[in-house]
Amino acid sequence: MAIRSGLDRLLDDAGRIRGRRYALLCHQASLSLRGVHAHLALDAVQPAVTLLGPEHGFYGVEQDMVASADECDPWTGRQVVSLYGGDAGSLQPRPGVFEGCDLVVIDLQDVGARYYTFAATAVWAAEAALLAGCEVWVLDRPNPLGGIEVEGNLLDLDFTSFVGAFRMPQRHGLTMAEILLLEGRRRGWDSGALTVFEVEGWRRRQAWREVGWPWTAPSPNMPTPETAHLYPGLCLFEATTVSEGRGTTRPFQLLGVPGADAPALAGRCRERLAAAGVAGVSVVPAMFRPQFQKHAGSVCAGVELRLEDAGRLRPVRLGFELLLAFRDVLGADFGWRCEPYEFVADTPAIDLLAGTDRFRTGLDAGDAVERWCVTWENDQREFRAERDPVLLYS
Image 1 (cartoon, helix red, strand yellow):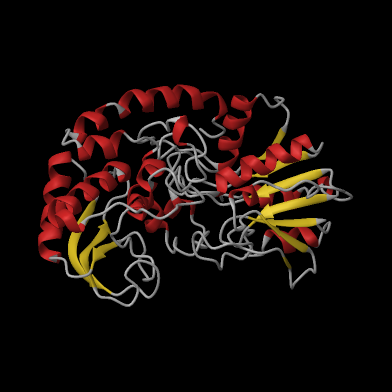
Image 2 (cartoon, helix red, strand yellow):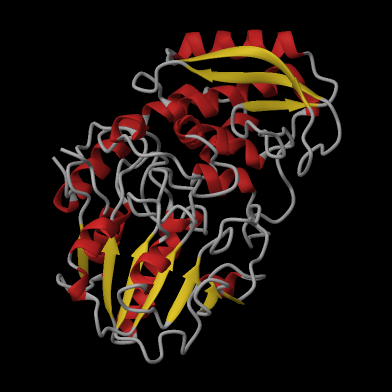
């Protein structure tokens, strides 16, 4: 059976949206199987009142942490309201944005990691819509990593942020609709608050390459499905002075700093991954020159990660082990990001991404990080039990 998105299922039953005054939250990866963008496909049936864009903008052209302005869609003439501006207040729909609407439709491709900000935008938009008296429809899409594996530690709510908005592990194994259903239960939304257009034919064991759809980058630095498989671990490097490959054609596959010993870094990475039993990826020395962001214009020495078996990979443990390897080799040249991160200035970025300060403080105190990783098992078990009631797919 061909796998069909929630958008395609709505288009097959287009009469449901005729006559509705709706706002549409989507982005450049919100495509039908025919490759038609959601706002254009639905406009042919019933034009939207308002379009909403998440981080990176409605068209996915902005880099991370770059504000998007409200604009006019050149194809339809509709207003595009940005839900990622210059301050934390811009992340919530402002009062009146749903005026004249009776429905909000959400169609955002997620990548299966807690840090990815589209889920926070979707939940906050849905909550604002419900308070404004609108219905909320969610057009679901597959989790590119599959929907079975869960990995990492539960977010400590003291470290809630845009890159960690919900109490879940770094790899959560949920689709966007399931995240909304889970958060709806936690927030006490009415059981019928959300209407979900499920993905037809998708099974939880299927990662993106098994879905059979072409990949459209949901954000500028997510160019391939393989990038998505590495991202739950490699995003942690955003919290360091080490380049995570932004500004190259292989973000989250290249890691490095100017002047480092690439073979030494690769060797130490291999040692740590072997000791931790992390498989499915190989590490080779690499040189690269970022064109923007960290170390822009400078040649960086470091490693390239080659994904060999996504099914065997534990990406979250991979990321923490690679952080330790770089710290081992770089010593004093390894540093944590000090600048504000996603509108938070008083908490280190690594604590926001780790969802706790236990990793950083334990590392700085010389504690064995392995003891912290063992605690993930209880967190994962707790989260699996909580998510079971909202799972939509076999």
